[in-house]
Length: 268
Image 1 (cartoon, one colour):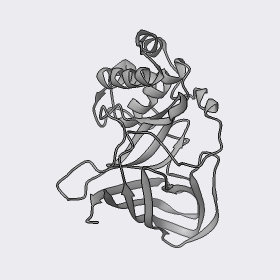
Image 2 (image 1 turned 90 degrees about the vertical axis):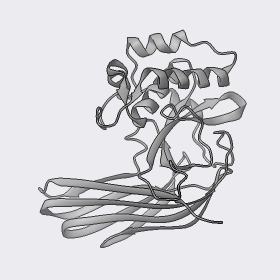
Image 3 (image 1 turned 90 degrees about the horizontal axis):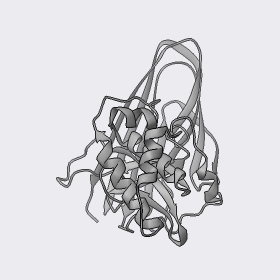
């Protein structure tokens, strides 16, 4: 599948700020499941700084915008060719030992409900266990936009039994780590319609390290493993660690953010 991605993030300030410094994890890596073609990042009025590939295999770029700034936009235009690998991440170059992803964070720290759920699931092997944990999270947490926030923890989503893809990923990560399987958060894009029109499609899922298979993606929100509809951007311990855009503004202005993401299939 050949996917065209347009992603624009705009920041506005009620009082102009002096400068803006950003770290962007907005360039997909090529691996067996995806091949990145033309990919352009534009930061209005910005100057590109250092860029590097981190230990998890993600490409990071630094950008600086000098003020006064009342509005700045970060725009992506890109093409990615994808294929279905049944969720298995193959050919992705990284150097971090998977065992570091056993560490829980503030938003993946389990409560009694998550511990009980993780202990109640039995699998024939690690892969079967991962699939059943994914299904259990999807059955327990109903997909419901607007009921959680970026700081909502897996335990909180579990308590209210509602959330979005971020909450599904955090809860699945928490349960997998409880069962001794390294797990991490993945940010990316999803082509969610087959009608040929662009749609809002920022998405997130989890990857679990399953024995000799290595990293395997699990999307509890959609009850599936990532296939050719998915584009993988980057990973981290949780949503904050894997955030596509991180940064700091220097000034007293209050920041507002608007994000627009569209993914559409284009002809080969």
